[in-house]
Amino acid sequence: MSFLTVENIHTYYGNIQALKGISLTVEEGECVTLIGSNGAGKSTTLRSISGLTPARTGSIVLDGEEITHLPPQEIVGLGIAQSPEGRKCFQRMTVRENLELGAYLRRDSDQQEKDLQRIFELFPRLDERQAQKAGTMSGGEQQMLAIGRALMAKPKVLLLDEPSMGISPVLTERIYETIEEINREGMTILLVEQNANFALDVSKRAYVLETGKVVMSDNSDTLRTNPDVQKAYLGT
Ligand code: ATP
Image 1 (spheres, rainbow, N blue to C red):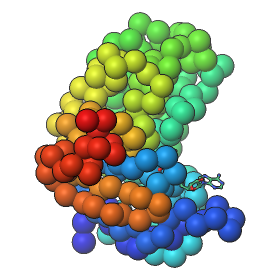
Image 2: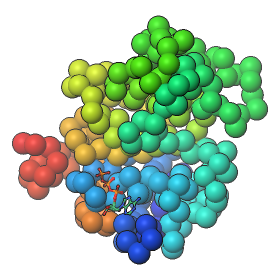
Image 3: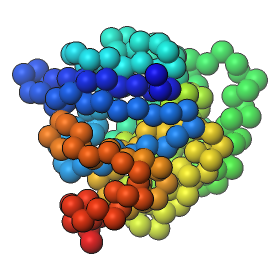
């Protein structure tokens, strides 16, 4: 059994079947990427793991605990934190308040200030803008904030949904350097990207999704040299 094991999940939005038997694993300390085009089911896979759109059948086990049908707040409590697509920061709250909210389920308040300082080290821009309202930050800054907020939950597994979406190549590179650093420090990460270049650089393994199914899975280096992957997801 892996640290995170997703086994044959089927997930629906009403009558629409988004996932048709997805299976994947993430080992402790690993960074794994899901790539795929629009509508392939990447976000839905993350939403099923975090309980926002629960799987109808199949199973999801985190560190030996079955979480498939638990409510999202319990899943956060057990160690899954998601930085959602489109960021979804609390626009009228400050940067600092957004980060503090990420820790709302934690009991170790003395440790929280230390983690907050670590996030300010990782993202100096957030440090400079602590008192600024999230809604007035740029897209890239809000992306950093969303990642920082998820980290404040001190998760066992960090789920990142398209951290490069809508932001400049320069900021994307910065964010990916930080993701790499977080992973190097031991954080387990499951990453979703449509633009696979950066994601394949930081992850060791990746899964390719098409219409709700895994169609390929391999080491990132191997996938990067696969002509089909290059044509469809790497823009080469
Ligand atoms: P994208 O990068 O465009 O977000 P994705 O790979 O993350 O793509 P999902 O968002 O997981 O794909 O969508 C998978 C399928 O589920 C798509 O066919 C999509 O239309 C459908 N879907 C997603 N959200 C909903 C919803 N709220 N209601 C109905 N169908 C949905």
